[in-house]
Image (tube, rainbow, N blue to C red; front, side):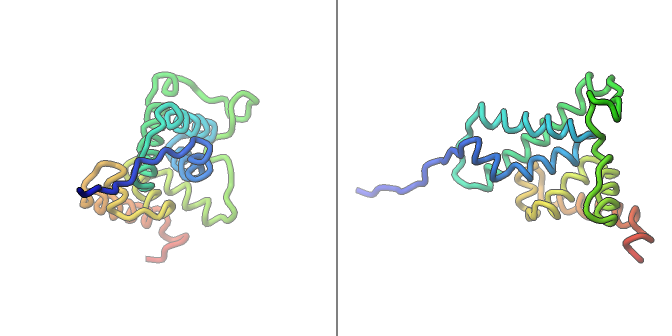
Length: 174
């Protein structure tokens, strides 16, 4: 009689998931929403969905992919809602937080790169962020976004070309 030893799906408690993946989720939310307060809302919605569903995964890569996809969906829902399309933010008021672009990174170069990244379309912004900031491979990005690897390669190539053009003269001397 043979017994198969298959790993049981693991449920990571929400607090541990936040500790492990919180920075990634917030960074994705920040690059996909117009304001920091919106990114905070997306962060909360993504982890609320995680807490409600308590998904179990055999591999941590699947959990990471699930959180990426959930974060992107939450950001898409927030930015596509009729409320966010009709509301005009009151920048500088106590009720509305600063725009996502109203803060600075450590260097002027990082500021310029972030602004250029935010200028890309969502498709390009997503693959650039996941490839360079989250260190995911093309195969991992393809799995997380449910795309063909060739599509991810094309989007990366086009996004790099747009970033190079945008940053030409200041940081690229092509």
